[in-house]
Length: 284
Image (tube, rainbow, N blue to C red; front, side, top):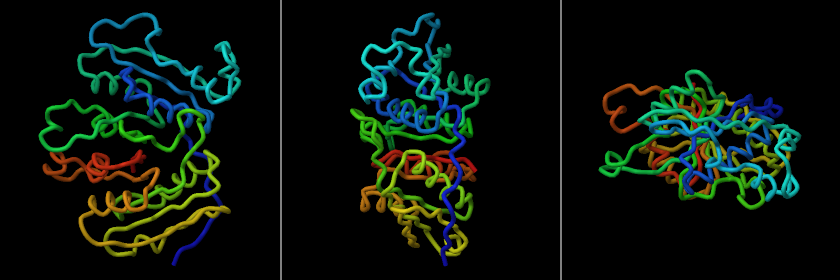
């Protein structure tokens, strides 16, 4: 039996950090970081890891004001001071490290994030060992909530207008993590983005005891569909994500328990490698 509650409180993501390598692939992640900072009135820090000596200027950093101007939130040629009038703060920082993962983690140890927004390449098998992965180990070691934006997807923010495109969300639940946290976070995110028409597919692979105790926030235009499935957890999640053409997957993470977990990655990481949408991973 499911029960409904009033919409949960606003997401407490006051400090959002977006590590950038300045590539075109990371632009979609930046767009999502900017949109979330606006919606949550947060501080957005854009950081970059220099391999040798940190440059003193930030001219090579991605520009946020042109994005805000394109979205019609600032007039063309606006001064920097007008950005703060939108309720957000933009910061840029550089750090030096031979290894990007180590550089980001060192920065996060001194400047913790409430939310990381990271671009990620999806590699499997041999290709995974041949390419340096950054997003997954950073999220794993920092224990921060992380929005992964795969390089080949558009995501749930329209680049040209900044309008949210969050219509369908998949929330896989597990008794090992905190299922209510995943539900509440989904509702808080949708409310912050002003999503009035939202369908959330809540799935539990296995028995349905987990679903029976969940409380679902109620709002006009929101639909919560619950179901249970059997089979390989990763295959089920990826299959449902494709079948329902979801705009976002929201998952709470669990600790890795075995050497096989370390080699293959957690369920969340394996889902990420095949997902056709952004994935929000929430630590327990």
